[in-house]
Amino acid sequence: MITPALPMLLAAVLAGAGVYGVLARRHAVLMLVGVELILAAAGLVLVTTGQVTPDPLASGAVLTLFVITIAAAEIVVALAVVMALYRARGHVDLQHERSES
Amino acid sequence: MSGLDLLFLAVGLLTAASAVLAVTSRVVLHAALWLVVALGGLAGCYLVLGAELVALVQLLIYVGGVVVLVLFALMLTRHGNAPVQASAGHRVLAGVVAAGLTVLLGVTLTAVVGWTRVPVTGPDSTDIGTAIFGTWVWPFELLSLLLLLALVAAVAVARGAGSVEDVGAATEEEP
Image 1 (cartoon, chains in turn cyan, blue):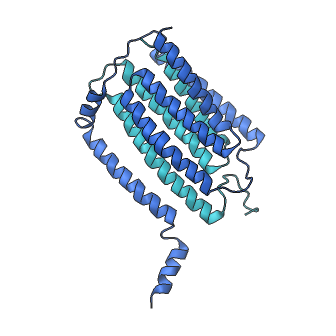
Image 2 (tube, chains in turn green, brown):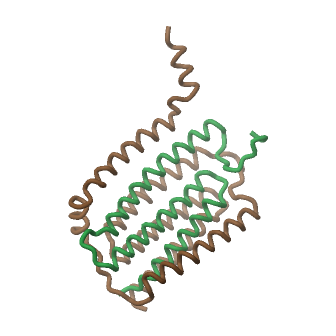
Image 3 (tube, chains in turn brown, cyan):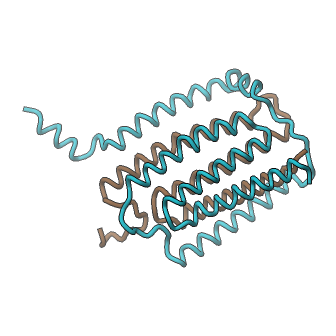
């Protein structure tokens, strides 16, 4: 027996922390950390729903596995873009003044 | 409060605290390491919820793969004492937006599932495997294509293929 509201609250906190990370970080890689946290919140909601509702297709777990895979592909491409950005501009500062560079 | 609830509360508090530290830490390396704790704690939450397969995949792919990539990217893009955080006003605004989103999501999601205790009736690993290779087989195959595309695209972007210098070098080599 488990209270499904607790995982949902944790998912809300994770999503909030992720949004804060995306909005408040100047370092491009640390902004991606926020994106990862938002995706983790989505996975937690899927798993919780899948575990407390009977489902012959196992949608909650399977969709979470898919989300994890897509997140891995996303972070690989995003980090490649960040590396290309670093080589082209010499920094990964998202709020860099154009006059400074 | 049942035993599972207490267990989830402990693991969940650890996860939430390390997630908040991962987005507020001023040292870039510490932020990445707090992300490890947060994602590992999330795998623990999946275990408490009874989804062992998802917990193991989360541990393998996130803690084993994604975080290593993030750490490599942080080390390769090291750049003096560049500021990591936005200005104070910007941070306050971001905090207000994030807090609002947290309250909104928390109220909505808890209203949907309610505070009553329910039994954990999730599928076991056999059911998940049968479902993946039965109902979900086409999305699964498409995902392998997506991973291949992401691999090729990441190599192409990171090597700078098609950039101006490469085109120049290629044309110079021609007689």
